[in-house]
Length: 69
Image (cartoon, rainbow, N blue to C red; front, side, top):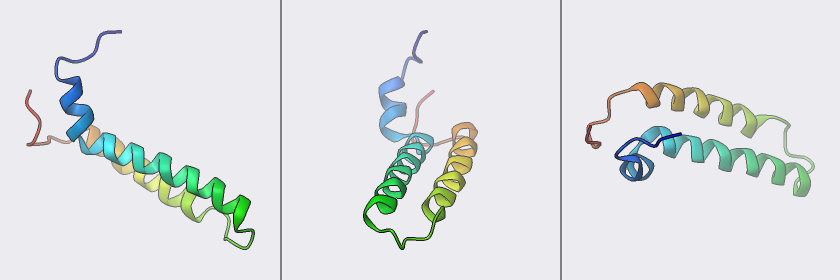
């Protein structure tokens, strides 16, 4: 596997990466909420995580002006 030439810049600035990290954090919070807050409604944060993942897929293919080719 070969990385793209500007991989560090993409990792630091791409919205798709930021959204994927946010989705991961929400998934972790969902698990923690189920452990420590038993009355927390099931699947609320998981639904947000899924929606953010879908937006991240779109963001991966959208042109982002803050990244060089």
